[in-house]
Length: 122
Image (cartoon, rainbow, N blue to C red; front, side, top):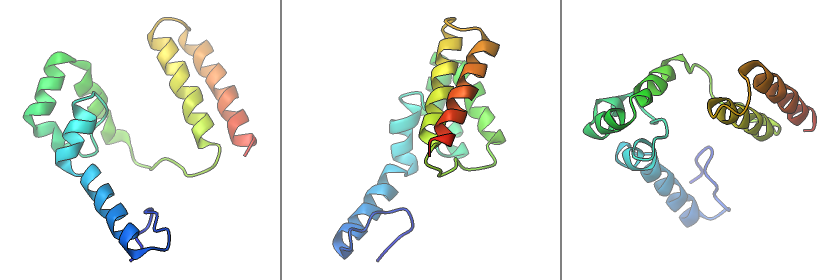
């Protein structure tokens, strides 16, 4: 039994358990642990109605703002080879900007150059 995005290793048993593991890991209950508890964005908007989410927002009020921005996510991340470099370039820039280590425009301009390079190096 092969499922899209799940490694099968041409072994039905491994395919089954790979799928079951991914299904468990991405379940609402686990998402509260692996994402909300650690401050990552939740996989589902329904998790915004949980006591765990409310506790995280009480501890970090900006968490609600970041999560609300998920409404703007209309497209999945691309699966091109240079995406990892692109993502790292922008993640590093945002981190440095938020820590006051870079000015916004300079940081994003630098990230653009690095991201373009990562995509060109495919």
